[in-house]
Length: 409
Image (cartoon, rainbow, N blue to C red; front, side, top):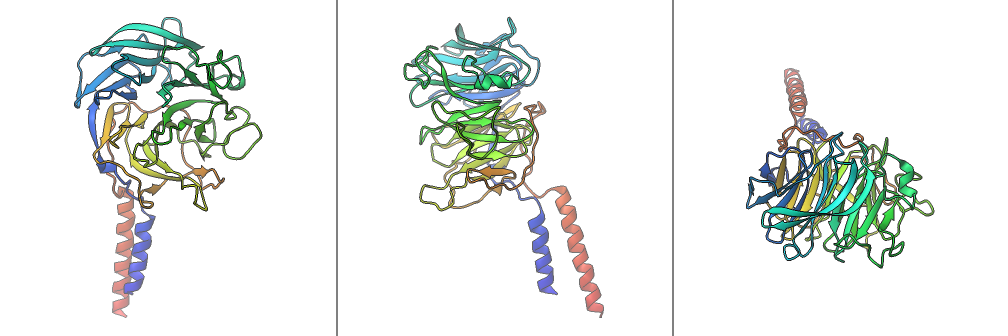
């Protein structure tokens, strides 16, 4: 009887939701935003935050939100995919005092890339670098990052016109590569007159560089299926709208990781400690960590795990050189309270629905479109859910009743 009880209790416990590791290892640094979507860090640790719906770039220094916005842009708001959508700092900031922003301009309805000169905590001159597609309600893109080559990389959506992603005459559905002044680098893959670096992109909310390898990563949202994590290569074609999800097809690059049922992938960050690629979910608020086994491994399927969970959805993820992970939700910015280093083995909850480069599929959950709730963001309890406790109590109660009956015999 004792063995039976132990076995049943073990089964009950393993069937309950596994607490998200590291959930209590994040703390709120700043809050009170209207809809925060992007962060960028100056070398001294000063944080710049893009407040999407307000069109404001805010500064957080030493954990305190500077009262006045650094800049306020005239944003057009029609859906959760319009407004101030992207932010980056010049790699030599503040000696090159430029803050870059991507927004949907209320004055003419176009998506626009600008850079703003910083004088102290105030943005002064606004210089237009690139006019893009007219801003539709959805698929605007806007995330950007500087690479180790000092070039600015910017992802654009297809503007809800799928054909744009394959059209060489359109800047929609592309990853662009620019010099810091907005000019086109001479060594771009399609020539010195073309800002396109990669194509076949549908709807992205995340673009980031691995600081260890220098690789460029992109998060991609599919329609009814196949959200993707893509490793971006110069001149590569990622398939939309002709190909989605895993599987090799001539002329197209398959994703490194894909989810059959979309989970709304958002911001991403490579880690200086080589602890993996972190990326967020816009709906469920799961923070993922993806690690790829080394070249000598027999199975190089990416290991995808959930590191934490945040209420209100995740809009961006960042990492600083000291190994700190930062998570942005619509209303708050969180910081990991410990340095996250490479794990010796799986220590986090396996993420559902992932399909890796080998085509392994494990099932899926999720939804389509970025409609992250602007409700207050915060941490969950990270423990067993109330339903789980009820199930466990019923199982234990049943076992005790069984034991009493057996003792009476």
